[in-house]
Amino acid sequence: MRRLLPLIGLMLPAACVTSGTYDALQAEHDKTVKALADRDKELADVKAQLDAEKAKTADLSARIAKMEEDLAKTLKDRTSLQASVEEMKTALADLQKRKQEADARIAEFRSLLGKFKALIDAGKLKVKIQDGRMVVELATDVLFASGSAKLSSEGKAAITEVAGVLASIPNRAFQVEGHTDNVPIETAQYRSNWDLASARAITVLKTMVEAGMPENRISAASYGESKPAHPNDTPEGKAANRRIEIVVVPDLSSLPGFDELNRAGAS
Image (cartoon, rainbow, N blue to C red):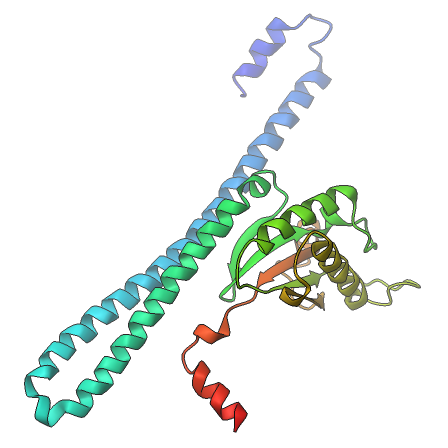
């Protein structure tokens, strides 16, 4: 692009090739380069998340292979080691189940990325894995005016589109989480960042329900400024912390010990 700028200057009429024109073109070039770099970083982050999940799956596969090897050796002496064999079978089945669950999570994450590809490419949202949960993140600066919990027309369209995609995922519940930066707010309507984040989360929830999300599959929460995604020491960090996160609630029934926990709770 830098090589093209002198050529552009030769092609334009002399009256048009001014310092201001060159600076504007240079600024647009720098803006494009930064946008591409930001996009590359986001893609790198997603790739790193997928690589981490793949590493976990590979580790489970290695552990299963080792368990199978140990089981084969143990089976040579059924009489003396029968109890150990049964334990090994149980452990092997547990590892296989965990591997299947890990594979399913990777497939679901990839599917979610595919469903939101258009919105991701448009820069309207991000999809990430955080604390073992799949999260759809939207910047509140796009959704709401400063200090407001009323969705902009563009924000409402984005939330409606997101709701349609998420509602199509079977057997999943979602939680809308409101987050703010650390700049305090105290108005007649919102006495704190908790109140503002809560109002925004509920607004998003209601919009998703209006767009077709079943009420029994969605909830709202407010974290205020308590869970920043980035340090609040720069304008960019503050902007990143002003966000709405829609969390895909994990299916606890697939966790080891779930049935035992249910039985203990019922007794």
